[in-house]
Length: 315
Length: 315
Image 1 (tube, one colour):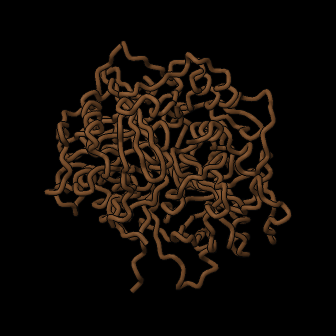
Image 2 (cartoon, chains in turn brown, cyan):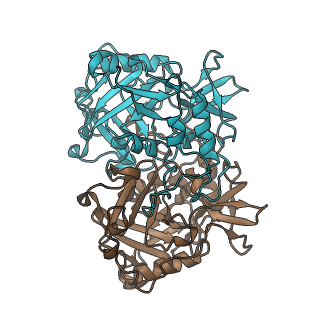
Image 3 (cartoon, rainbow over the protein chains, first blue to last red):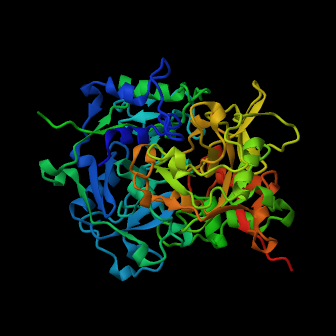
């Protein structure tokens, strides 16, 4: 598990850079933009939420544990199928098969690769083999939406909903999860009806927003992203590993709700409709201190990560 | 060295995904958006340029070779100092000391870390220890500029100049290199006058555009980016490696112009003011085929990578 200072630094990538990063000189307290640590230190307990254990995937890799929060309000059929796959231990023993630089890390059944044996594919159990596309969803006024102020190259409107980065288009009445760093999507064949959730990918580079509205996005990596992004890139076409030995075997993927309560990851996510989240976004937009002499005054949807912390033990 | 098909796939990350990536089904020729391979296949020899050997850094890592093109028109003092450092073998035997997830990979003298011994710092030779900031530069009408059509969250105007992603601001009369994936910048202390080029970083995640105009950007990784991005993340604060054994030792960093002609990397870069580059950008903006049913119709500055290829042997 990560320590808090590091986690904050990772989530708000720029915030500590320079002050200490490039020289070892530590920033002094000043009347400048508040730091994420300062802002998070003033957050209230009510501003944090515990992910529903039914929406929390716990993936065990040799490198460490990866936690993924699912987004059933955006891709309900795919999330339901992934829950079934995890519940029935579909992913256990499968592998990370592809790491394409500046794009995605992908996992699933190695036999589904070009060189695989289709007769040896792992059965999907009671999960469905294909699902209808869930690439966008109609607006739902019941879903929270925290809009960002600075616009977006790709979508008419962007912001956060239930902790996830979202694009919206009033003209079409649709909204969708955006392919930001750490978002998890569903691989499929050319036919849009061919995704199931048995093959998943996480974005590991510059947000490939051209994928938005073309694939089902099912969630976000809350913790352990570095175990997916810090892997050697595959040398085959599209970053597939060429040799079986290069693949990373998945020990298990379980739903937290299938774990005994005592073994469930104890984490909390900052609510994206909280005052502290708004303050963090604003501080990052306008960062000015001894190091940052020229505040951007703007921030891009995919440059904002939502803070995650270890939950304090209950007294 | 990479094979061409893979290199193209890496440069235009999305282009082949889906058609083959997620299923092994190969896309059929169609009347859809032309692929990068098709467009590059029709490019003329005049549309490619050979980087000036004086601007080409050749970095040898245990994982492989990294090529970095320097941008003297944007950061002339820093580039000159880096040339001196490379010429005098400053970087040889130093190390990658930091890999912060979704942010930067950084290399330099391990003794400059917080726990280092300042008395054991490697001397800079005839290079300067500090330089004036070169975070932006005045417009120069002699520099080419290929504007992008879709706007940008951070800068009033964006495009490409001499192969590099650039932001511009007519109001201030300034332009600058943007912190896109694979761009290389100069670490410094809090004081803006403290950069030298002896500590460099490459962007390995979502473009940290908030760094724009706060740091000197000196170039772009042309090849071997996967050796910088595919490293285990450091577990210390800000992604510094905590144990010396985790660092990646740099065998050497040389200017191509210091190598015998026969040993210089034979690569070519597509000109960003060429018709083929414009066609590639347009095809990526509007990608529509059997897989991409919903073209983005837009593209972000940092989602465009400039193609690099092996030069054909001279007859």
